[in-house]
Length: 483
Image (cartoon, rainbow, N blue to C red; front, side):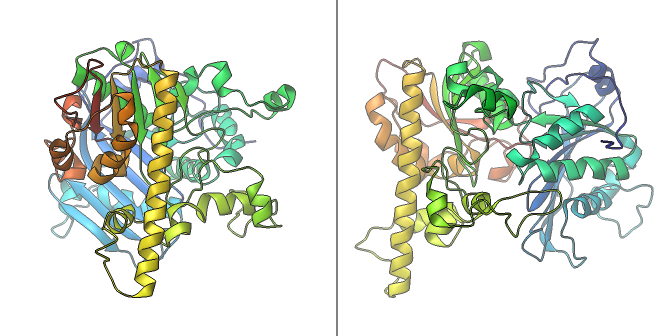
């Protein structure tokens, strides 16, 4: 099929990170020559209901990219959509949009209009338009987060062949790959001079051993349909690994950790000497830990007892995104939302950690909600602790640190404390005072009100008890995002 893409030379891009550990690729790599001339790089994260764009400036000296601005359009599936942006000169938060923006392509075009001056920076233009990106032609690289990369082990320049391979994987991650490919087409239309690069969430896990990645099903069918464990959140785990290794004063190849990416989508990963050796997500992001709307690992036959329409197309399906009723139920109508009616984990924690003797409300409805929140919280803590125990065994006890990351992992002291209580038998310890005051990335983390983290070590907070045993394993909180 024809994708309308140019056909540049295939290649693998080096990791353009915001921290001091920027690793350039070999000079002979075709992307390296491109990066050395780059004025602006866009990092684009297209989800099922939002589009997030970060712009980075880079010069010819080889210095690490510096973040210029970050912007997001959210609420594409739950109008009204909103626009937020953050730069050193201006901040906009949850500004409601009245333009009927409901698609990823429209959201991307709107963000570009807000961030790029294009020579029209009159007195009424917002500060970010006047100062950050002057022309669309200055944007020469667009990096796309693509959740499912199949067998790709590294980032790739998007060629027609690459695009078709990713399109074939859309059925395995329909809520993520389809929006990402939509944005690729948006870049072709709005940024025709930019080169498109795909960065894969699954690539970090290409080191999974065969006995971990293989499902016990017919091998020929598995090979034909590419049915195996892939794993996801790899961009986040790569950042966590770099940050923790720098914090510990080790190289990545010397670092072994159990990493927890806990957010509305949650997963765990066992990393031995810098390589992923197991992870909780599988063929798709659905396996493993429950999330805001995902059920996580359940008995595969459950959904057929849940509904007789399991294999039929969901009403959510589109011509570009094919979703069965079963996938719709387990991806969108399960998790904390199904148990409590809310996806706000902060509210769930607040309800769950309030003593039963001190109910937040006397109404029966509120008491039932509090009971539901306690159950959802207990389920999540139990599942997280179970993966920590499993991965402790997988690493044969050779663990430098247990690392909490992701929006919930980095911000919920109560959750960290509850998990540590369950895994204390393994030798992990927690200083409650440090835990309560932990704000990883406090010198620069956006999650704590600052800008970008320039030093990877500042993204990490040590919350280990000073009375830890001879194992000397640390308990850490790590700020991270997938931009």
